[in-house]
Length: 147
Length: 147
Image 1 (tube, each protein chain N blue to C red):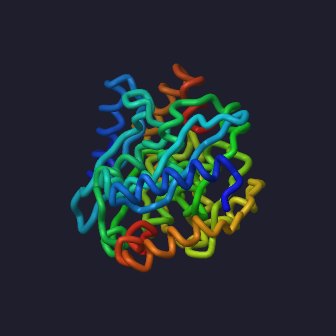
Image 2 (tube, each protein chain N blue to C red; image 1 turned 90 degrees about the vertical axis):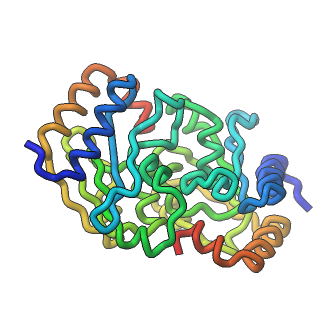
């Protein structure tokens, strides 16, 4: 059961990615209760090595003043990797809601050390979607996390 | 005087960016003595908030196996910000040659803490190019570093 509408929107992005043949990770950037950017991993679809879900959401939000980032919340279906963590720190996003960190634990420690508030939902839909993908595509998954 | 041909190539990317009206930061990814990706900051040209010079070089290198990244050296005209630092860590790049950190000191400490070798050249051409840009475009520069 998913009762958070923004995590639901991130999960929907992940599912769109899966249906495109991509890696099913999705994110949305929310400012004042409104989605200003949504994104999904584009490694397969665009051959991109920098468009993880979080990065794609930031990119699609476009150029924003620092004040907007600082009031925004990032929702993402999976624990953010070091690159996405770095982007969160660069732009001063102060709160990140994470679907799950069972299948992959990113740089959450770095987020916490830098004062970013995180909330890990351990959402079953997020967990199951990613688990199935990794089981079926271990090589592709390793590529996405630099392993 | 620039006697490092790869830093020269990164600087050339920065100059191309400047001539496009962009933020003059350039990077190249080098594997076995050969440039496999070159890039420059694309904030102005593409409205991109994720394509810093280093990210654009990684993107243009395309999908690479982990082994290639680990044998590669990243050359960049300016000290890498937290986002680019995160990307370097994600992909396990072990060595970064930095043109200068006089105008901006990025997350070099994070690189060092994670075992990445860095070499800061304090190259006068890199310093002067960036100094002039920042003096003439302080607001744009602040946007690029999330301030």
